Amino acid sequence: MNRRWILGIMLCILFGVLIWSGIQPVKRSLWFFEAGPAVLLILALLITYRRFPLTTLTYTITFISCIIMMIGSHYTYAEVPFFEKITETFHFSRNHFDRFGHFFFGVIVAAFLREISIRTSKIREKKLFPIWILSVTLALSAAYELWEFLIGYLFTENVQEFMGYQGDIFDSHWDMVMALLGGIALLLCSKWQDRQIKSVTGKMVEKGD
Image (tube, rainbow, N blue to C red; front, side):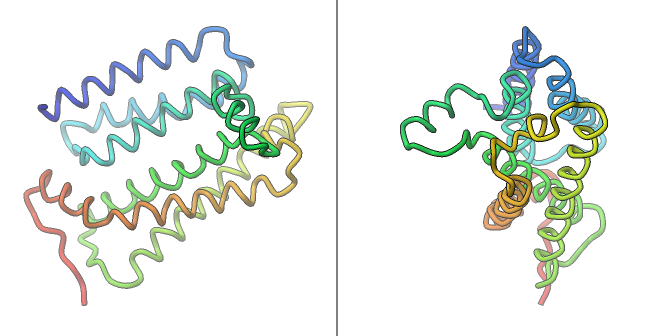
């Protein structure tokens, strides 16, 4: 199927899920906070599509990540029904949809960082490049946790409920661990991403020593 058709289908699905997510969400304020970044990201990619089209892999990861954010914004990350059933089946102590979301946060950040860095700054992929990708991914994950805490502290009465701790005092730590694992997962697909970068730019990704 033509690449534009695939991207068009994903865009239509995203708009459909966005509309659904905004219909009677559990908490309207949380919906704005969680769905907002997805909407801004989609708009940014639409604006830059002609000047700087990304690989299908990066767009697909963005599609999945935005779907996760929209589902989380509708139900809250701690109350997604399908993951509630998983929790009951396997006797987990909490709903793990939040962990799933932070894993894909790491994947999408690493995907954007790696592709944009390779295509714009002509970085030769040396040993320190993957470490830099993971370091920035982890730093952005930590920044998000701090931002989420600040918003919850200033504008809500119950910070733990807003952040979805679900009784786990190490929730933020585990979120960052999952983001790091997501970044590692993306790096394991680096050859796949390199091939896609070549298909978009027509140039091979240079390898360092």
